[in-house]
Image (tube, rainbow, N blue to C red; front, side, top):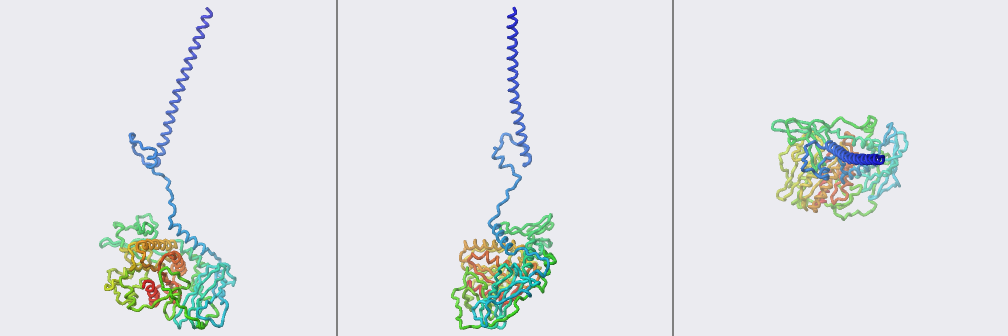
Length: 567
């Protein structure tokens, strides 16, 4: 009996163990499903939350759930990829960096530590009693400050010129900066007679550095106004190459967005109602009071040459140099590029022909000549009828000096047209922007052929603005010329450099230092193009014409050079 009771107890314990094992197994299975369900819910909640943070909330069609790839395409990303700089941007940076290295900051505490023309020395190297025509005359300049200390760095802005007023002769000198306070000025003795020597300190290196820094600090020196016309209503608003305003404004994009001009939008008028623009100089300066002292009239253009100021040049039985190569496109321009004698410009690199009226008329027959630039090129339109008297003005019903000008010779099918380059164009007179076009745009509109000639100049109106603006425009013109040569390889393109101007007129905005940097930059950018080059900078130094609009004698010489390129 005891054994039966023991067997029953053991059986009961075994059954209890089986039941407990089964319960544990069921609980473990249910826990796994519960955790999986819970974990899946948390993951979807997290994904949905991140999706809602970057997209507007909207009902989702469960029957058409996009794939993961599609979701990534459709969800806008918050972070924007920075566009890599274009080839043009990289080139602009490269040119600016090079210029910054060439014109480093030159801080100074006192004016007497800057370069003094009076205390600097000019010494003729290997002086002689007799100089011969064709020789080179070298002068060593040692720059010193007002305390007579020798300068240890270069960067002074010098202008060298030789002249014989009785012969109406003149030429520039080549200045080499050794960047240690010494300079070599080289003159080529182009003619015989008594020759006056001049080396002017236009600005000391400290002034050059101040002008360069100030120029690149902003666009505020010139204010633009735009005239909007709607029927009989006219409104003037603020405009500019940059515009800082929270109000509504008009944005005018040109050349694929590379050129931008802004105007405040007048009420109740569309942006297309802009018809005219004018400018006004602002009383804005980025120079310190100490720096402004460097640009007092008494400190600009001071003579460095003391003695001798004159030399005598003789023929010395030397044979005349006969240049046989005709002036043609792509010819390298030396320094100096020529000289004036008896008022006539004579190039140093090629043979010039003096054409008579009949030859000029024959040359111009069938020619389409487009002059694109500023008012120094508009002077050509006024002078052309004196060179080719069959060219007659044609009235296009424009108004003001800066309207499009046209000369026609219907019998010979000759056209000469002048158009201003677009913004920036500085004048207090309102000028039309209805048919305005940047020079690259104007070039792109021309098909080009052997009878098409384009003359380009720009620079004077860019001087008050950061150098980047000028570099960008010149590169755009270069690219437009390259496109033109693809479709019309025989098209003739001639670059007219800007000229020197008044020495004492608002140096910070319009000084010749700005023009000289632009002149060198333009020559460098266009050096590999098959174009002609009229060196108006060198011409006007040789002639001593320190005015914005050179006299007719200079314009005649420019047009004669132009005719030698195309005839």
